Length: 118
Image: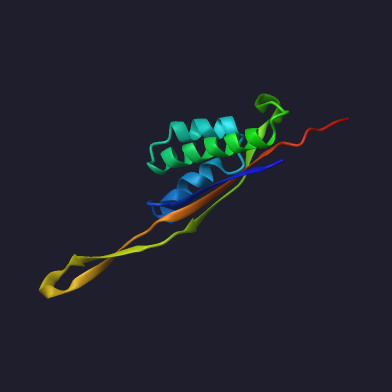
């Protein structure tokens, strides 16, 4: 059983967020949380909170099973571009240069590893 958590309009550029997301894709949840906790990028703070939210959503869906036995892992995580704030910065000779302040949407799916029974 999988659980989903979504972060919308995060004020970080999608490119910077994808650098951190690629570190945790496919990892076990406890290992991914450690990676995010000790990462220096600012995006890792928001991703750590989102990962904990996805784990909490999984616990709510599966109250009968324990978290330790489930072997949760990050099944999929994707970063999409969000809305863009457009600002003007003064430029030489009375002109204005457009500044695009980007944001993103992050979707994370957490699932339990299938148990092999022989």
